[in-house]
Structure formats: structure tokens, C-alpha cells
Amino acid sequence: MGSLLNFIIPNESVYGDWCFEGPMTQKAMHEYSYTHFPEIKNGYKNYILVEPTESYYGLTRRIDAILRKIDIKKFIEENNLKILICSIADPPTFYNYNQLCLKLKKHKILDRCIFLTSNITLQGKNVKSYHFFIEQAIKSKDSFFGVDTTLGYKSEEITIDELNTFRNKKFLSFNRTVDKEHRFSLLHDYLTNDFSDSYFSFLTLEGIHCPPFQDDTLNLEEYLQKIPIQLDTNNKFNFSVNNTMRKDLFLDSCINLVTETSYNNNELFISEKILKPILNYQPFIVLGPVNYLQELKNLGFKTFSDFWDESYDVIKEGRDRYFKISELILRLNSFDVDKLNELYQQTKEICIYNKNHFNQIKMDGISLFFKKL
Image (tube, rainbow, N blue to C red; front, side):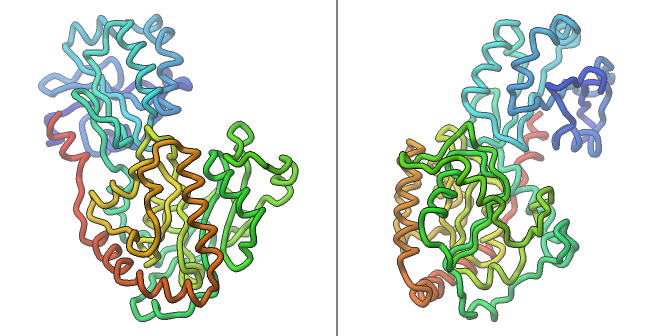
């Protein structure tokens, strides 16, 4: 497959701040033939490959200057090329995608473009999406447990026999950066309710531009003076998140609260965050985009509607969806720990199923994409 394709990659001198060597560029450079712009490789099917920064915004912002500097239109027309524009480590919104398309259409090269994203809701004739982080996780299963983490410990895998352990805490929720409304809103709920019998982390607050959904908020200083709230980080704020799963925290808590990367209702991006409860046999409530749980079901996983209300998953408006989730969290928080342990035991078979399903699932959307190219 690789011998048929050659990717033309921008030289470092023209990257600027609009493009970077992201996951697709790295894959092309390691597994396929590649040349640097504007070198064509004869006998191959050539594609220009770019990964814009800021989920397409970087290219949108700079494209006028780029096309003035380099006559890409002439180059692609003379060589009958197409441009592969990727954004998979961060999902582009519909707005960013549409803004870029308007610019490309203005320059009369839109019909030459193919888009690849990790926003599952973006699909069309010239735009494809796939579950980037889940596929990455499937390919790197051996790196989750038993290896040194950047936080200084080795994550240990939980065994089935340990699932009957009594759990002293109700919730477990990891939040490194409070930078979006749903995370800031959860921080507000945490600070204004009694979650002393739960595990929460909030390490940095960068969400001044996106305040909580709640109307009756605290002063900014009141939030800042509580940060950082830590669990396993020991004042280390820059670390790899993929395999930082301290066993005792998962075994000592009943329900995982996942604050996903995407929350807007035109993004559906499943990150590594949901894998932590799945890999550690925990039921989960997801603060994420509309239809997130449905997409998990489409992938073969099970959720927990038999045990609590998951109707929040179909609420389109983000503010309303958050308050529905908050209502659920606060209701469960009103239960004593013994009752939540009973509830955990009722969900245990689904947790075991989800872990087994992850271990057996086979997904290779990116290879299928390359085959179609």
C-alpha cells in the first residue's frame, strides 16, 4: 500500500505558525514515501499533506499570505495534485471547517482538497473522520500498565478479583486544565457542594474566557485560590496522560466523571479520557458532546442507562446538557458511600464487558483511508 503513495510535505522553512508535523505527517514520514514541497516523486500517486495548527484555524488565518508566497495553485494544477488537510489530534469545529472551505473556495482550490479529522460528525464527499485516539490506544495497549509514567509511578492493571473491594469514595474525576465551560462548571459545583468523599483534580485554570454555566458564580479569585487541587501529580503539571492510572484511586472510587475534550454540540471527539474508566472497570458519566454515549454504543461499548438517567446525551444545547448532568451527579452524591458501592456492584458486569470489548475491538480507519487514496 505504502509504495503507491507519496506525500509532499511543506519544508520546515514554510511551516511558520500555521502548520506542524502532527500525527499524520509523522505517519507518512515513517511508513510511506515522502518528499518536501515542491518535489514530485515520479511513478507515485502524490498528495500535498498539511496539518494546520488550531484545528484548521491556523491555515485559514494564513492562507492568503501563503498563496501569495508560493504559487500552490499553479503547482497543483500542473501536476494534477490534491491537498490532504488533516486535523486529528484536535477536532475542528464545523465553524473552523466552513471558514477554511470559504477561503479555499475563494482561491479556487477547494475541489482539490480532501479533509481528514477526528470530529466524527464531520463527514462528506471530501471530508472523512475516524476515531484517532481509540485507534492509537488499540495499537499501544502494552504501554498502559507496568511502564514508568512521567508522574513517577507505574500504573498497575486491576484484576477481576479486586473488583469486590469496598470503595471509600463516590466519584473520581481528573481535570488537568479548566479551559472550557463544562470543566469550569464542574469546578464550580465541586467548590459549592460537599464532595469531600470523592476524588477530584483541577490543576490549572485557563477558562477565564469561558465562565461557568451557572448564573450565581464565585469571584475569579475564589476559584484561583483553590487551584491546584491534586491527586497523583505532586506539583507536576506537564505529563503524558495516556498511562497515568494510579490503581488505588480507581479501586477506591465508585463512578468516574469524564470531562471530555470536546463539548460543543457540533463536535464529537472521543479522546483517551474515556479509556481510563474502561480500562479500570469503572462506570462513567460523561460531560461531553451530544450523542457521545450513542457513539460509544455504535463502537460496541455499553453504558449505564439501566442504573441512572442518561437522557443528557441527547440534549443539544450545551448549557442545558450540563445542568442535566449536574442534576444527576448531585443526586448520586446525596447517596451514602455504602449505597454507591451497591450501585457499583450492579454495574460491574458492564464494566467487565467494556474492558473485554476494548481488548478485542479491531479498528483501522486510517489504513482504510489510505487504501481509498
